[in-house]
Image (cartoon, rainbow, N blue to C red; front, side, top):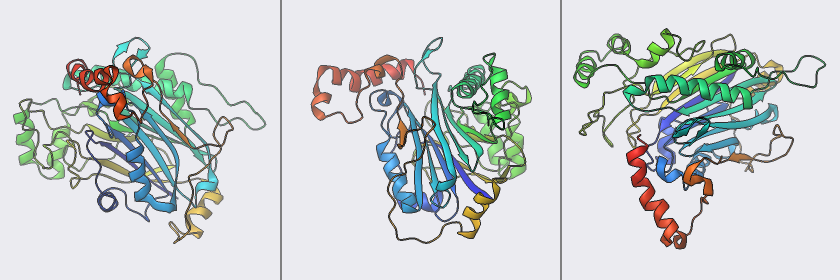
Length: 401
């Protein structure tokens, strides 16, 4: 069995916790073979990420956390959203078909959209078994329910079209292609042809309650039963129930408090003038099946650097063949080592050997492809002042959260 941890965390553009804190609370060593970390508002705000989409600092921190026992096989940024996958080195020889894509669903018209909202898919195979991890940041606000459902279909359908390829039939050298039809068919096609599918992120679904009602139920219902009563008003549960989104996907039982919105460095819910209703905005869903078993689904209250709490799900993914069983059992989960490992160089779908960290171009000001390493001289220029000082103020007016 392959042990997988999937994390989603809206970091609110704040500095990450220390290596020790991350290991203690969110990313423990000697536990998982595969770790996929999805973040939103990572390293910079959504507005500043138009100019500086780099996630070098965050990736560097994660490299410190995992050390030389894991290889970074794929990292992908879409403006302020980021996904990254680490694999224990015992499993690396069995990894193939590493590829990633991003779909923008933010501000714009028609198919021309910015990356302030959207999703990233990371796909790879373990001994021939396909795994796909999608991390997304969907439309904000309680009134954005229909928009979120639409974005789910757009992201899933586009990733199905661009990223997913079915396992070819015996004797065939040409993989099956997704149907070029409606989004529902593309979504169904993805679920049919991906063995292990995980869909998570800051999905932004809210509780359809007023603040006072939610707080009253939270105070009266500190136990699991009380939380389930509150979840009856959850928009994501409604979307699944009405088959408006995430059809065919499941979520493990929620037994933790709402993950949004907290005052900085406290466990108190939003005390600002907006008085946002506490909600489970941060979620992880999966395609049920014999190959996937949920082992844990929790939030981490101890990490208070953001107005969101990180959420993780632990999976056991099996039916990966004898080679995978050998890699994950006979050589132990995490064998001790003192050998330093260089960054991985895995075979990509294009047949080139390279480490895949891609930052896609979006429309608008980011089309200038401003470098992640702007110099202070650039920041003092007229264009630099416009993009680094004026644009974030405009964004706050038109872009929302």
